[in-house]
Amino acid sequence: MDRIEQKICDIIDQNKEEIMAFGRDIWHHAEMGYKEFRTAEKFADYAKKLGLETETGLAITGVKSYLKGKGQEGTVVGVIGELDALPISNHPDANPETGASHCCGHNAQMAGVMGAMLALADPEVKESMDGNVVFMAAPAEEYVDLPYKQQLIAEGKIRYGGGKCELIRIGAMDDIDIAVGHHTAPGLDLRLSNASSNGFVNKVVTYTGVSSHAASGPQYGIDAQNAAVLAFHALDLQRESFQEKDFVRLHSVISKGGTAANIISDYVQMDSSVRAKHIPAYVDAAKKADRAFRAGAIATGCGVKIETVPGYLPTVPCNDVTALKEALEDVAADKYEIVWQGADEHICASTDFGDVSCLMPLLQFATGGFEGQLHNPDVRVTDEYLAYVATAKIFALTAYKLLKNGGSYAKALLDSYQAIMTKESYIEFMESMTSVEEIPMAPLEIV
Image (cartoon, rainbow, N blue to C red; front, side, top):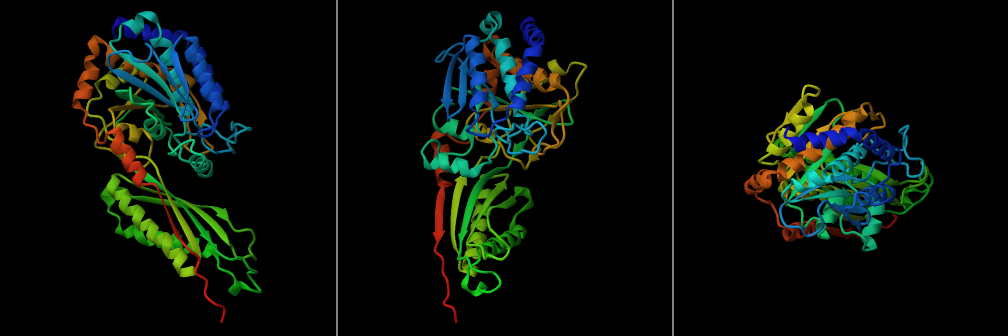
């Protein structure tokens, strides 16, 4: 490390208790997507305390703070953390007010961005970088709580369910050239995360039928639950048509419907996700899913409404990870082991960082300090230094390495990158994945 890099690490270590307290506080005050008002305010207040120009209320709760002020010349690096948590209310540390818990580890991201902000705001460190850094708190990465997001869309408050998707749409990422993101990875120390990931599209499927007594008059009813069950079976029958190379995943849940065993259900709602490695593959799979949903309605005489909502795009691996690689090696030293996840690897999960990667270079890393399986109530923080402080160091060192020496690393990275989409073509695609199809109920006469 050079002298400034050592200073960055020293500043973060000198403030490690504050950084860990920040991460711990967010852990105990988890909030759901587009509802992260307390978390966003805490982050914005800290940025303002450091004297940074800060914008709030972006995509409802998003926050954006400029190290050198908005509109400065040079390459802009976005250091991005996620505000939201998951609806896992049976976690011991779940927020009793929201029913949410950070079984996703996003609190570690926010602590890491906060710690990086603290170090890079040091006057000498700030002036040693040729370019600017944006510290961003992004809402709603977890694609859950769909009824609430649909309500926001209906009210015109958002257009897309994913926070970064919405930030792209409203132009909040227009002035960022390179993005740096983080994930929590229980069971390891550090990881360079450069794999591709699945993209997906969401379906909200509503079946409407006619209720009646299930024992004495079932012939007078039209069972919406039967339509949903048949759709599930039809979805299963599609699976043999998917190619292994596309990593297609179909998963659905009945989120509403049915009141009693002896009442024919007149209403059932299914929430469904269709994922795949490539956009054409999940567009194809989504069409097959729609056939299955229609089949459930047509066979039973139910009405159906199929609402298609755009999800996230597949992640594009980065061609040049030099700055992040060096940052990981600096932080690891002789204390931590690094897992090098390369561009030839693939994961079937999804993130709205994938959308970002289609428009600009994306550097991603992971830190441990947690145990358990993510998105489950057994997740625990076991090492606050690794989870929060090491994360802050990697964020800060990566941004600094990109922008030092005239921004040579940043320029090389930008030269190696070819965008998959422009902002305009991105929005055009997202809109193409937004639709509503309805088939009316078709009851038969009682004979």
